[in-house]
Image (cartoon, rainbow, N blue to C red; front, top):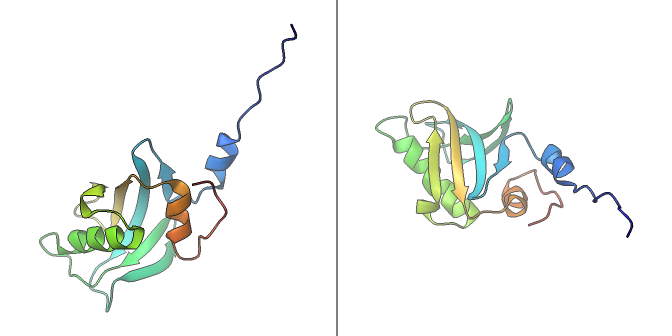
Length: 120
């Protein structure tokens, strides 16, 4: 019997090639956003530092902008609103969302300007 070293997986390389604002989890993906409330319309607006920028039409009062983000993200990624969870940033422009059941490949393919060939 020969003792061959086990093949290393490319998971470290894969994780390094991901945009900094996306992190895979066992439940789905975590998305770091910079949210600008009070915009003319709700839409993606490129990058803001190390976060994806999302402009939302709703004002930043009584959780309206957070709710608008949840609705937009659910529609954009084709998941249920209950699968979009605000993890951090309830009263901040910097927000962290968990998108349950979404694979990294699908998530990246749906973000404008991020269409990369990654595994689903």
